[in-house]
Image (tube, rainbow, N blue to C red; front, top):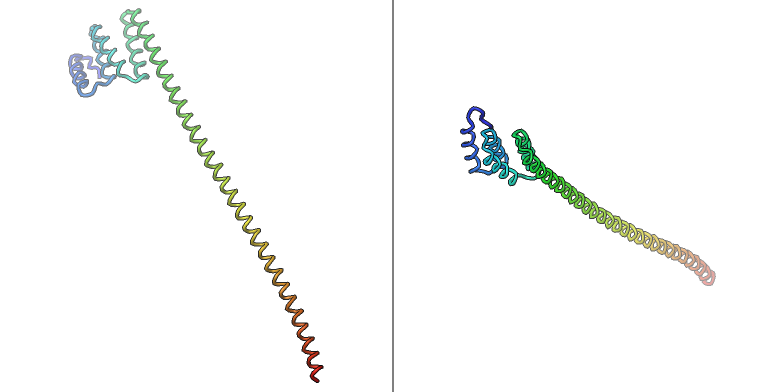
Amino acid sequence: LLFRSNDSLAVVYLNKSLECEPLPQTYAALARIYNAQDNQQAANDMWDNAASRAWPELEAEILGAKAALEYENGNLYECISTLKDREKALSEFYESKLQSKVLELERKYDIDLYHQKVRSRNVITLMSVILIVSILVLMHRIRIRKIENHKKEIELNYEKSKSTLSMLESRISVLNS
């Protein structure tokens, strides 16, 4: 993006770009051009704009580039100040990443806990259904046994009645003869 042969054209282009969408990378590019033109005030303003609009990771990168140019220009005090700002930006970035990871792990834990509770409820429900079905099967078998015993008792009584009837018929036939 830096037009080494025509910095003024690059400045015009980048300023038009800022009017459309003020991106931190555009401000950083302008800062590099102004620094190359020895316009330190404009370069510092662009670096500040870039850093203030950037997300923490990009802010640290922008501040690192600014510090490198300050070092090359012999502005050691400004370089140290910028590096401290970069350290702060990196610290914020890593803290943000850490908080994000903690939140992600907490969400994952909550989801796992929810699924564990659902599985536990499902197991309890399944065991309850198995218990109820087992009780119903047992009750059905007991009823079948009672019916079979009652049937045997009826058959036995029928056989006894048949035998008694047969005996009575034979006595009646003896009496009639």
